[in-house]
Image (cartoon, rainbow, N blue to C red; front, top):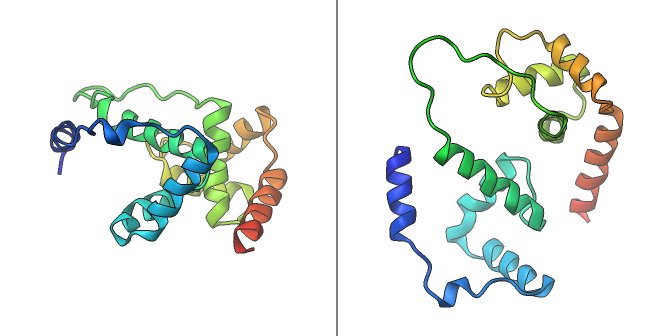
Length: 161
């Protein structure tokens, strides 16, 4: 399946007026989440959230996931020719990518986490880029790995409850 197939599918699946009523309260959102979790046909959606390191119970994570879809669908593909110049990601992306890697690899040290970030997000981090450079950027942005590790641990313990 390519991008054109996905766009055609989305166009064919235009929601009806009943489906676009919107979510008017947190209670409505909770009902939507319960329905998504309870129906077996939504299992791929739940797996998608888990794979992206997102929580489908958080409304902001839905926005993040939709943003990733939009970036994938509507960013023009790279044309053949010289490699694009790689730019350093902003602090928000660094922190988000680090949090996603920490969720699965809490015991890894800083350099190993940067290697994992390069593997998981190759569009943002060039494979030839040294892990120490990414680690330096994280430090320059004053992003604390220890603090993120604690938050990741606390959120995983909260999910168990």
